[in-house]
Image (cartoon, rainbow, N blue to C red; front, top):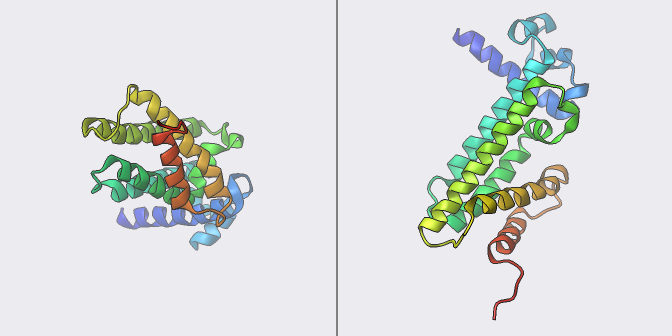
Length: 194
């Protein structure tokens, strides 16, 4: 059983590379099999279709993203700093999870039955994480919010707005500076105080 699990994990790793390189549409099971060092027929013993294999890749990347965010933020108690680290670690992990990004952001995969489930789960988890940080900030009297739910939606929407620049236009950004500017804008606004 352990050998089968290791082989399955090796296939998912190989498929992640192939899907990342070619995209879902252009990726071929033969290419995945070659990348995994096995025959195509052996590949179908572990995964009955390209769709099932892509789902496994996306689920693994979603777990990676979640674990990276939790690891980066777990020991930070100041809510503002935790929000900043949350956004930075999220962007860095998302940048390494190109198949997850494709699944969450592209419409041409809508026909795959699991895509909507992945998107919904991803969105719920992100909203939950951000809302938790905001509620901690309110409890510690660091944030003053009338509507935490609305603030959560606004922050998540703004964070998603940075994704294109960071994931698609790699190398042409300064992540920490952009995150700092975004949070300053979101937390302190644009209105001049007298």
